[in-house]
Image (cartoon, rainbow, N blue to C red):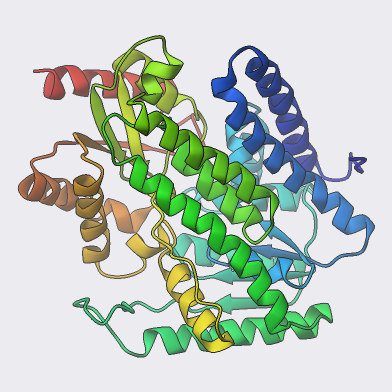
Amino acid sequence: MDTITGKYEIWDKLIESYAYLKKVAENIAKSNENYFIESIFIALTLDYYEKLYVAEAKKIPIAMLNAGIPVEFFYAVDLFPLVQEMVTIPLSSAGTQNHLNYIDHAEKSGLSSELCNNIKIWIGAMLQGATPKPDMIIHADFPCDSTTIEWQIIRDYYKVPGFTFDVPYWHYDKNHEFFDDKTIPYYVSQLKGMMDFIEKKAHVRYTLEKLKETFERSNQARTYILEILELIRAKPNPLNSDTCSTLYSTLLISSGLAAPNEYIKMVRDKAIHNYQNKISAISERFGGKEEKYRCFWTCMPVYFDPLVFSWMEEKLQISTVMNMMGNQVAQPVDTSSEEVMLSDIAKNILDVPMGRQLRGPVEYLIDDIIRTIKEYQVDFCIWGGHISCKQSWGTANLVKQLIHERTGVPTLIFEVDDLDNRIIGTRAIKKMIRNFVKDILDS
């Protein structure tokens, strides 16, 4: 695909990084088919980045979003969804210093060091003219207060139309102790408001047929993912530790399109094959080593070093069977009518990873962790707490205590900035994990 380059530093760096990764992965896959699926994921992600420039060239409106907004609503009316998390997080994983420069510039410009670096990276790049300018901004005010504050800065700077979701605090499940029967109707009303906003600002028109077509494609993807998540509950884990995160990343940018479904189906088929043949992903990739322990990384992964999970597999024989950002529970939506479809979509939004755990009472987080430990046969947890997640840090020791009381599972807690290795680096993280395994698990 021919693309325009050299316009936006942050975007060009992503294209450059993923083009390089794609070439490397394809070369490795030629001699080791176990890496073929990874090369497909990288190619899909690169295709997404390249399409922003295509959208600009064709004058297709660009909507900037956060992870709480389903991209299907934009593909259904041929808009380009610019998902902020899928810019700043991959940039921090790319091995360059760009994201650190953006963080420093944002703080020199007046942003507090306590605010989350996830969005601060974008703000620093934005202030230097290194980002594309969206035609509209749509975001939800979760999972944290830092997110809400920083999105206001972005919206005020670009001076483009914006729509903000007010995410309900209470639960939608009538059997839940914090159930409120107004939760889903309230969120559905906001989804309708967003659709009206998009129609007016982008001069497009939603049709039920196109919405159904788009969400039925994502239904297929979600069905595959739910099957995958069922399969990785088995011992040993048939898939590598980074799988859950890559699946979630794929949905964030491509849900509702046809191409990702083939990739997700390939992952599902590999999981079935390995499960049926009792092949562990660790053994498959690292020459006969077998899974020894199963970890639940209860917070965000270490984005500045995505190879930490692979290191745990190779050196410690630990399968990180789940992490917060890959912990999906969203179900296929009923497309029989617009009202029913929007109700199901509202439930899925309220259930997005991180959002569902942190948008309400602490019981949401605790119950989610306990459920995951039991379902995935977890041996220990790691709370690698992002320093800016103030509401989660306020519960860290309580959660550790309750995990042990209810399951007997130990938890390693340490502080980290998941996007900035200048706070705590890879070497220190590996040392803490290695010592925990030696002193607690192996003893």
